[in-house]
Length: 342
Image (tube, rainbow, N blue to C red; front, side):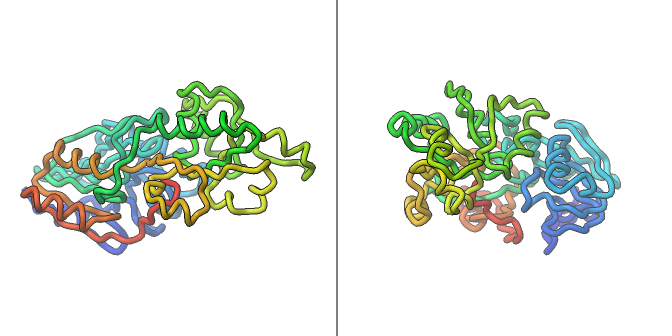
């Protein structure tokens, strides 16, 4: 069996596979061959020579960057094995957003899995995370501190619905990352029995249409546009839910809605000071990343011979693993920013 460092190694461009001559989620565009875990912009860049990803991630990249985002694309469904230069690659559901995948890499008896971003709890918009055995498990660590223990999603959505009942005269502006989080919030609301029209910011329109094409029913949606500045025009949004990028909640656009309740759906809303500093009246702890318990449970379930930790609180998760008697190392990869809305 070869050494793990000979199959995957950290570089300034991201994880590189020498025998396969490809990168996993390279942090800059322009590599010859990339395997992409999911469509968020800190993992999926335009300009690579060739991209291997799930069909949904290919669709997301084309939607966000245009059809010419790469010179060659190869879609691989979950569970299919693709061989590149004697290296076998298999994509496994990661549960992060639609099309997100763990990347299993096999060569000369060694199996390594790179999770990309992932979560373990139910998400009605994507396939759930699957545990797969491997020798080396390469995990994210965005919320790898014991303080991060996310509550049940249904309870957070319930807070939003309770606020609408309590303040029917006020619009409810929910800041949510445009790809993945927005569609999950919409679908969670539908599953909770909310069937009214949900209004969306223009930045979310194409991505919501993409989810519909991919089979995720989001129910009635309309653009959150105010044709006029008259009070009568804005009053139609009283008691309604408007989804927008987090950055939009502090703009003049938001002020045109009737006495808006400012909300934010993110795992970072676990930190009360962060919500208060951002002027968030209704924080919703909805994360698309694994929390501390999910991260540690997953490592125990996979039970690898060695744990590598990529981005986030990598030192903390690696230290926990060492205290459990596991071999672990933080990779200190840079370029994977913590998306504010995840």
